[in-house]
Length: 217
Ligand SMILES: [Zn+2]
Image (cartoon, rainbow, N blue to C red; front, side, top):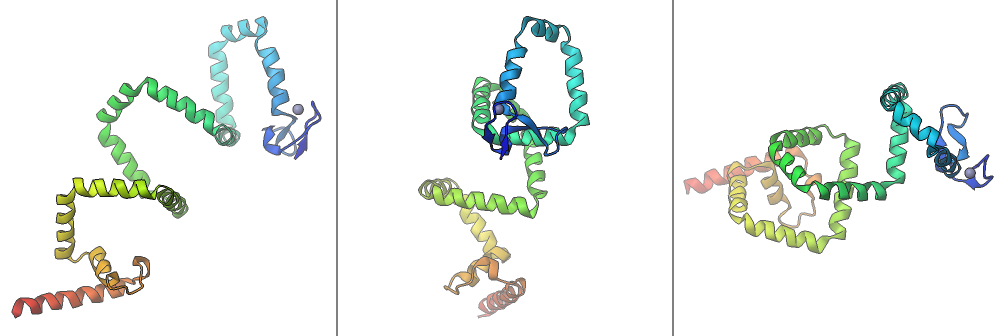
């Protein structure tokens, strides 16, 4: 909490702009006071003409300032994104719906590139990111369980051939997944996570032996 030097109101820290100059890293006047002041001066004739005249120069200066104050810019953008989540999303939605055809064409044209980038991102995820994503997915599934089941059912029906082929391959190749299924099949109380790799290897050997024996008789 902090007191605004201009309006005198006590406000939460994030309602004060980030500032490199002050001790606590925040400006002494609150955001709404600074905005009021800025708005008042922004639209004076003199300033409008000035901006128009020096458009390129200002752009260049802006770019330079940002690259010099990368940390500040990063922090500022992050805070802005968090505080204006809804507004940003709404804006993006409008922009997207205006250019839906363009987006679709772009995706179609750059399919491979996009897929490769997504794969790369998945591969490079840190454990922390994985954890966050897993939790988010789980929460979402719980919230939308009926819908999720319906989608899964539809997908299953649509690709039933592929699924059964997949299962057959799992069985023939004795994949880890298949063996884990077999281990947990009889209410062993184990979940996939609890099964050590050694047990999987042992079970695989056992199943191979059983198969051999079945062939002989
Ligand atoms: Zn204020």
